[in-house]
Length: 191
Image (cartoon, rainbow, N blue to C red; front, side, top):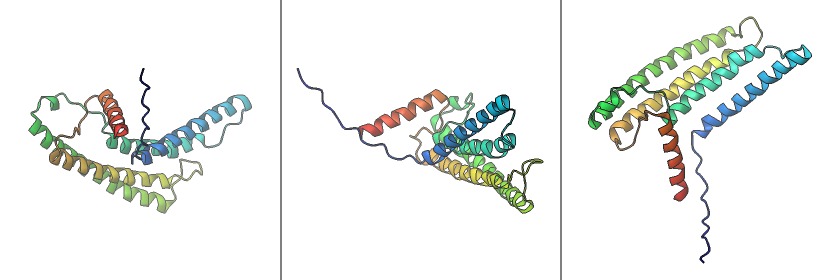
């Protein structure tokens, strides 16, 4: 009988997506604890945590949403409607994707530009969350930050769709994205 061979697993490389995903998870967890504590205190002690709604609406949710946009693009997991796309020839798909991602980059750049002006205006007037004293203007800077990042991500994907057509830039099924991510992790562990 032969003894099984034990191979040492190589450590995984740090993925840049973690710099986006970890803060989003942490903020989601903090939001969950905050809301739960507020509900328990309101129900059992008749003393809710002040400004929970405003903090959730103006701080937690924008952070989670905008980081989610960036993470979804980095993973190639945005929702896609591919009724016509799958029927196109491979050569056409490359240039179609390049055009669509370029258009998306232009739109994202427009949102970033407009968002920058709105964020500056919100800072100038010291914008707060509704009628409360909760400061909300800093989160307005998430709009230009997120859409600026998306602009570069879209442009990068547009260029890669033409220069590296062998890479699959378009995943029409979210389950396929999860499987492909796991395969990449497994392959990275083998190297």
